[in-house]
Length: 245
Image (cartoon, rainbow, N blue to C red):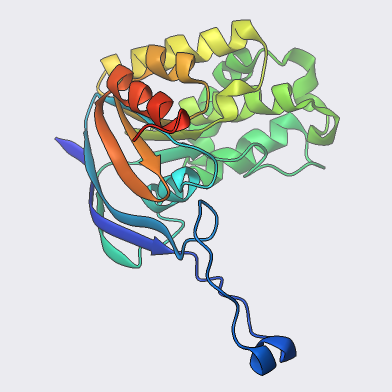
């Protein structure tokens, strides 16, 4: 079963600056070409992800990776094309999103769990498992503003994996935290896909992506330029980095 289908998707920046007095007198701003000057964030993107598969998304900064994840989640709308989603989608797209710095870790578990669609009685049922997975111990009753970025990432990931999503979208945040916790997260995600879960990860850590994801796509200046196995996609990314198309 295809859990996500992306067909001919376009997304514009919608951020054209207003012309000032100087531009009205001497003419509009000249359009420049380059990675950050294009009108479209994403152009004619098509791919699909089957249940039980893991997809890595790579590309240089500004090429549309995070925008694509937000489109998959539904927090942004496409300007053209369609995205079909099946099942419950969970996401960890920005460190600290869904948390409140003045609430304790315990209180933030209930806040973030509710945002992820969990019922209060369900959060109570898995609360101890969340704390155990996060390895935060007594710090769970301290305000989140006292946490390091690694501690916040532990808590966010622990809540996410206990929300029982059919599809997980993850953007870079697994790079935060110590090596042992990163390994723990990787083990969980491998087990997750083996049990039929669908995983989509954006990261600049190509080694981790290659170990974690079977399939991949490479974006370049808003276009999908390669899809296939993760090692083939990474090879294309390296050639783009070297200036070879």
